[in-house]
Image (cartoon, rainbow over all chains, first blue to last red; front, top):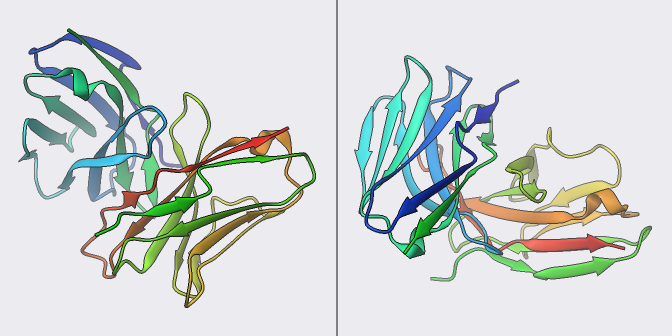
Length: 109
Length: 115
């Protein structure tokens, strides 16, 4: 079956630095990908999405990169802030949405 | 414009009791999804519903679990005869009609604890 996994389960960065969170997916037929942020005790919050016909999409302080050749997705957060501390999930859309385990981002003031 | 609403936020049940979780999608959304999340784990798909129809229930256990999304009212995830292994956070998500808009918006979740 499909699986989505993350390279790093935890990530610590200094406030103001850029963060990069990676995600590998296995279903080459997936055509839609989303990054979610989940703070403790809350539901996942949509951050940014990208379709398979694109390789880069930018939002406010966030950029998602998609490399279909190696089935890799990344989330870049510019000028990371303490409020960015959370667990970040990538999700791929095949027949249904599949979520990775998540990467816990800690921002050090 | 209210987001996805779930209630209760916390639910405690004893083994053998029934748990009933409710989800009200965002206004205008006709697709509802239920997910389960264990501590330190990702979200696991359970079921996808549209109004009065179950579209995909491949992630939902065949026994004790059921879901509905009636024409009027919230979507209900029902767990009968709960066991300790059912303890988890259950999240509901909704999305607008149409296949082009696939983004799912999540509710705050219901945390079920089975004693």
